[in-house]
Image 1 (tube, rainbow, N blue to C red):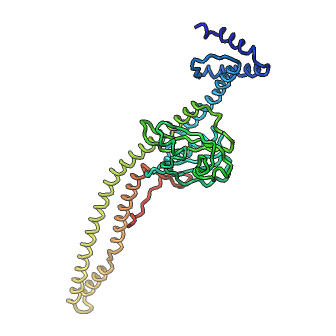
Image 2: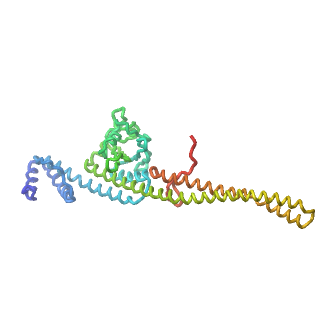
Image 3: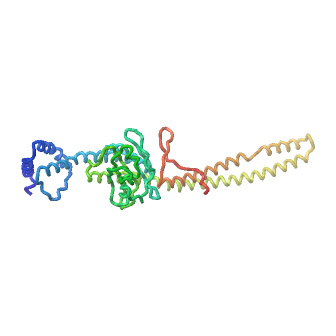
Length: 373
């Protein structure tokens, strides 16, 4: 193992630099500190048993290892930022958007587009933004998985592909890698797409597509770095979505159980009260008829006739219509709550937020009546 000693490595570097031009010697020596820091952090380059035969090989090796220093720092920063928001529960579309906001800055991109897969296998654009707030190009609202000519759709169909870099964003019919030429006409030249997959070879659930106006803008990133970054994004985003879905499922299940039980009790009591109102109304009508018959039995200006008249007036003004209307409102309220609970169960798969008071976002639940086809 003498060839791995510090003395041997130093001698080999001196031997290789002996034939290098002066400016190349300076470049190699300048790369040594960054290379050492990268190796100290645990990175091990793949040597494949090929010996270094010239100063050019040494320069290439040191450059590739030193570049991993910045990649490692970036990966740590991205992971830290993603984990910092990991405890914030949000719908899938919002989780994807928050993660894209981190990635678009980390990868020095200028634009991101997030897509989610619907039940029909279509990748629907859910959010997009430019880092400087500039206008966003009109992107295809949805992409079909059957579009195999599109490199991102093709990557989706390959189970183990987690990212794809495209450097020709012209339209497919022009031999490019985009659905249409809008992105290219707006000046974007490179795209980095992360395919977010769950474990156990499940179908991918999301796409984060980053764009830059720089030619070959993402080629500076090492393949292993992009692979690690893609796995990290899939894990953090997938975990957040899974936790949110699980929590929402439990909440929806609990609400369906306890809420429906309470609503059934309220509905039964309101319906029973409605039956009582009907009985009271029938008895009131009968009492009013008897009061009028009783009044006819007494002569004018007698005490009995006066009391019978007062009884008739009291019964005539005791209108139960308003009470019946309020009971109907209670029944309609229980039916509305049933629809809301059903909407809560459906929102487990497609939750949506809406703005509420004091700047808070709440889960949007539909309580509209079902449409008739």
